[in-house]
Image 1 (tube, rainbow, N blue to C red):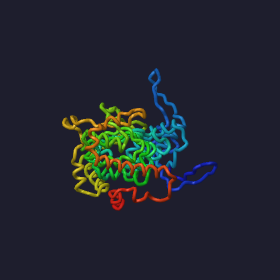
Image 2: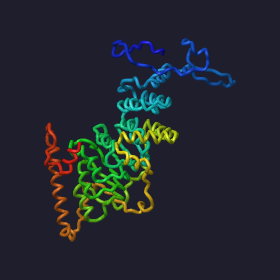
Image 3: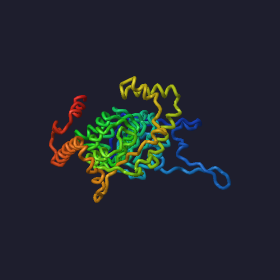
Image 4: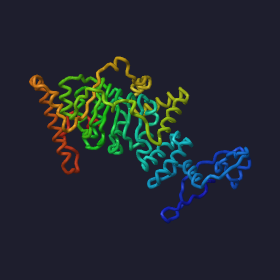
Length: 407
């Protein structure tokens, strides 16, 4: 404990570890505690018996070791292979020591637990209308790579946010099922940029089934960017530029295989979304600790970090001064546009396209069929054995080529 030489026995071999500085002992008021041979107070449990006399019992060696590892969690290489019960107790001990509030240690510690225990650390994360928390804890949030549900509604993401790269990364490809990105001023260009890695590299969001893009200024043109989501079952486009009609129903059915729901889907009910996992209280600690920071210091740090993230002072100033998006009464009165994938024996989609309107919609129908054939060609090429080259330029639109060139 006095930072002397440390030896580690691993797989039958004894080796010396260099460059590790262990956590310092907590200062004790009693002068007797300066003697290193005097037992530490933290190793005892003090209680009172029935007569009111003070008694103490020693903690188990496991508990003492657990506290020691929690204090020095940043020096642990891996927890893979340790039982879940030990991981749970170790996480609780680190949380009690407020390890996850230290910005220097928190990302590595959370990465350590996420690599070993996956969704048990955090399986669902709700950051609805909590833009400051997303901004201040971006590094920590990226370590949660086993999320099944992520709610970023009203987080002011815009069209080019750092979180986009994480959403389409391979770490979330096999886990993320629900994604809520409504109310983020996301336009057609932003949705194109978000789905670009999926459409071009054929990886990312492989298991996404529920997508909420409501209250964003997107148009019908953006629907084609969602054709790269193979397992999409429910879609919320309420409060957008899309208007309910035969043309919209036909386009969404032909492009995505979804039909309009007469009743609001329970999937997009915010009351069902919550933060769940070992790190649930850690997220609450982040928010509580952020709200207790001095106001001017908090603003300065947020502004400096935001300039580093986005690089545009004018945009960041507008974002920092803006309040979280909350739907007012007018927005609440807008029609609900929920779409879902019907069962295999459901023939309702055919009934949604009356024959009387077919003649009037020939041009748009022709364009839809054209895009559908392009999508089928891309799907057929995806099913073929993978080749060690990028997709041909003929499978990409001119806008996709421009987006590639922008990188």
